Structure formats: structure tokens, C-alpha cells
Image (cartoon, rainbow, N blue to C red; front, side):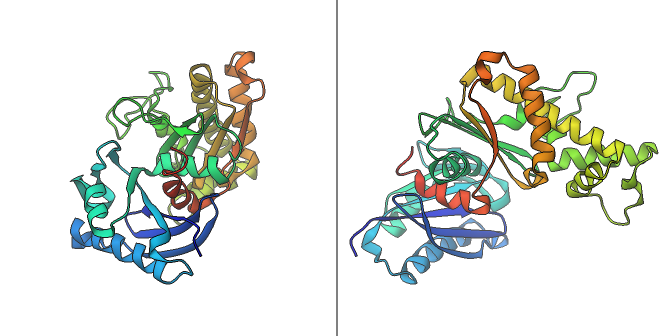
Length: 317
């Protein structure tokens, strides 16, 4: 067997997922092992090396067929130098991971942040396949993003392009402080954390809502379920989250003119109930010319996007 393959690494705080990926963007095999952050950065790097070698050894491919290893990590990365500047969830600070792994594995290494590689994965073989101008939102604990122009990741001056969750879109009178220290960020209302905060605030105010009857801590799914069941407070929360996502998209549309917005992450599992409201907001707030032919779709690759996109750093970036 002589075809080339790539290894994609999704470096998370709890688990490291590695996947063998073909040159066409097909995920061929997956392995997952613990990150073991408490043991320190050296142990985490040891595990990356071990898992990469393991998945190839357990496959029908030979080590000589591995053309490169890509890695995505939640944190700030210096892509050009191959350094993870800060990734608190894996305990990395100023770690020159590219040079370390190149020395250990003897293969070319590329890195990027997790949102960028997930976006690249979706464009390569997911919801954006065949479309070279996409902007991807990841709605989870926070709001992440990735920008793909001409089929390639937009990095920006120092690698921070696509921080969509930190677009300041909330009016001053409604704004609260974001984890980044600034006021009015999209993340404060449209992430799972923001949705839960608004729900808890409503319960504490004594608003009439079924959410106050829950015996356990409120989740974002609880809020969406209540909204779908007709709970007015939950409907208001979801509508607010959707409105500001659409508002941010309107700003992105007149700046980058993407053909497709792709939305992934846990919050996106609310489905068309959420997406219809996002589309309505986007259309209402955008000049008509920049909406023509533009679609807003759900991500397709789920947890596999990071592995596929990390491998795609060698082909699609």
C-alpha cells in the first residue's frame, strides 16, 4: 500500500483524539486516550506521541505512509512558529510543540487552534464541502469561530482572526462583562453559559417559568426544551441568543461576504427551532445584496471535525 495518509490530533483537556485521514478528507480510523494534564506538559506530549504511533501501528498502513501530523488545541497558538502560547485546559504555556513533535516523530507537524481546525474540517468534508467561503461558529461553553476564505484558514496578524464570540454586539445598557474582560461580547448571551446565566437570572427574579421547577441545575438543553414547550421566559432567552448570533453574522457578511455560515457545538443541537430565528435575524439586519445565495447550516462532522481539520492543515491551508 503506497498511498499517503495524515494523522489529525484533537488535543483536549480530558482526552486526546487521534484520527487517520485520507487525502480526500475521509476519517479512516480513530483512537482516543486520556490527556493526563495533572502529570504536566511533558506527560501530555508523551501521550500525543504514543497515541499517534499507536493508531498507525494498529492500522493497515505503514509509518512511512504518514505524510504529516496536524494538531488542534483550545488556546492561543503561534501558528508560524509552531508554539502553543497558552492553553490552560492542557497546562501548556509557551510550548514549542511543533519542534518537539517533529523531533520525536520524524514527521512534518502543523498546529492551529481547535475552532480553526474544526472549521477547516467542515469545509473539507462536512457541511461546507465544495464551498470555499465559509464562516463557522461553535456554540458551546463559549462561542468559537473559524474563517475560511478561498478554502484556507484566515489567521490574521497574530493568529487571532475568527474570535467571533468576542464581537461586541450587545448594547451598553444590556451588556455584562465577558470572561475576556470586555463588555457586550456575543459569548455572554449566545453560548451555553450565557443561556444558562439568563435562565438562572430569570428564576432568581421570580419570573413565572417552568425552569424554576427543575430540581437540578439548569442546562442549555432545559432552556431549549422549555422554549419548544411554550415557556415564555425560555422563548425570550432563546430569541435573544439567536438575535445576537444573527446580528454578528450581519457584521461578518458585510466584511467577508461568505457563502455559508456553519454552526456547530452543543447549542446547535437545538436544531431548526434555533436556526430559523438566527436566519430571521440575519436577514433583517443585513443589506440584501450580501444575503443573496448565503445559507446558514448545521455542522455535520460533530466531534470528528477537529481530527479531520487538523489533518487538513497539510492540504487545505
